[in-house]
Length: 400
Image (cartoon, rainbow, N blue to C red; front, side, top):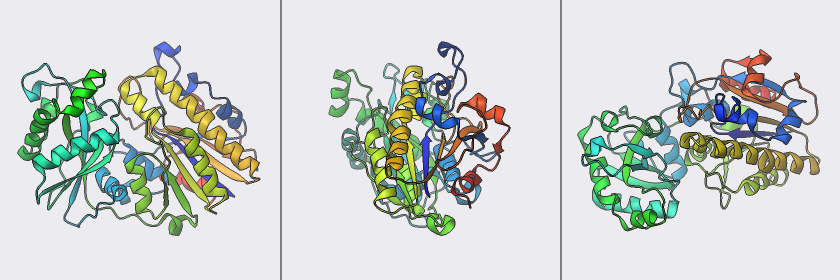
């Protein structure tokens, strides 16, 4: 038996008026999931422990079977593992986004945050901008590292775990009240705008009608992580397929194989087919037991507030990933169990993460697990099946 998790990041939502009061998951054309649902167990899972902030860090740890209260030490340290940054016990890692701020206001604190991802800037462009930040700020105390797209890393030598505001929580708002209290971080952010707003990379982006990546934004501070081995914990040899450093970092920490797929970039137009084929290959050719396929696009479209694109991202996930993996494993004569779910909701109405429970669908190619429901938020709630300890859902998938 092989085991698959297909994780549609932020896929769950609330009813949207322009979708006839349906959620994007309800509205999307998902023939593969609809057919699978007839034989699948549909239920709800609570992936965010009460009192913890809803995020892809805590939620994906839970889906992989790691209790967030025990294993979570911050988001950025997990990303540091992916980038290959060695952390000392005294280091603090911080996420270092490059964001888009409004330009018309004279004072930095009066500006508004327009886009937490700078139009999903390419890693190649971002690397040039991070180099400019290194030239301006890097010293023995602060070390900058390029990540992927808009997501980068700052290591603070002998630092402290401070509270910072997540940029995607305050989209469209004036930033003054959300700026760091510590003067050195506030000063770096203000100075970064002066350097980046008229940087040649951003002038070219503006000419093309793209959002400028014109300011740093710090958040997600944490200490060196320590995860137990996934294989030792579950008895399954596991692999991770994701474009996102956070998921790759979790995999590195859990001693899972990280599969790099060319063209996988975390956007709506990622290489879906390449991810699906990589999953098929690692299960059928490389003799792995378990693969985790992470798709970032629904979350990004939720942050952007794009109803149309969020629907499209779910339709792509259905046909290009779930359908392709299902067919590939069937053609190979492999028995498999597949868990399909989001990590957390990213509702269109608020454009950020919430702690609501998420719908899951558990499919077994060898058995009928069906409870007569479709795979939607409403149907999952109607099922009466709840996994209050979301980190234990993987035990049901793996039958352990």
